[in-house]
Image (cartoon, rainbow, N blue to C red; front, side, top):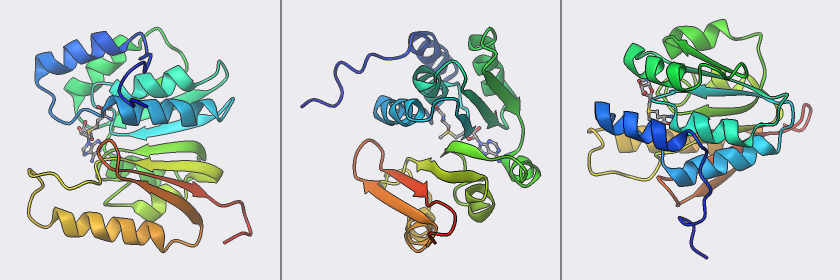
Length: 197
Ligand SMILES: C[S@@+](CC[C@H](N)C(=O)[O-])C[C@H]1O[C@@H](n2cnc3c(N)ncnc32)[C@H](O)[C@@H]1O
């Protein structure tokens, strides 16, 4: 089995990749993570999804590709240049809301919303405000993170932060999780149904 062929990428991907290269965006999500997100999104018909850290919209395109016609997605990023690229690409799609917002402010204000899948791809939602973000997940919902395998360009102290995040997820009695040494290092956690923790 080859995991990098026949991925059947979303139609928008080529355009987004060109825009990503043009501005030199250095933190794009990869196709394996995208493919997993698409599969998980397809498992939640009519679902409401959240992405923290839109970037130029690469992983958003994969999430959209898995969504059915009733599903909706909100994606946020604090960088106006990145947000404007993603907004332009998805401007005709009413099922996508892309917001230019700071995750550290947005997450606490979203406390009344519940999501079927959260892709936490920015520091807020992952290394900060983890509990608050997990509280936004419906029972049975997915919490997905990538970039958990060590990289040579990790700043000092980041490996310890990553280990702490993994331990926090492992020790959370409300979660069932799988760690994958694949792609950039992915974790998929599912929130147990009410009363199971
Ligand atoms: C790893 S990149 C996201 C990649 C993206 N998901 C993709 O598909 O390519 C992380 C993103 O988080 C955004 N970010 C960092 N800090 C943030 C914050 N406090 N609030 C919102 N977005 C933030 C950055 O601007 C960056 O685009």
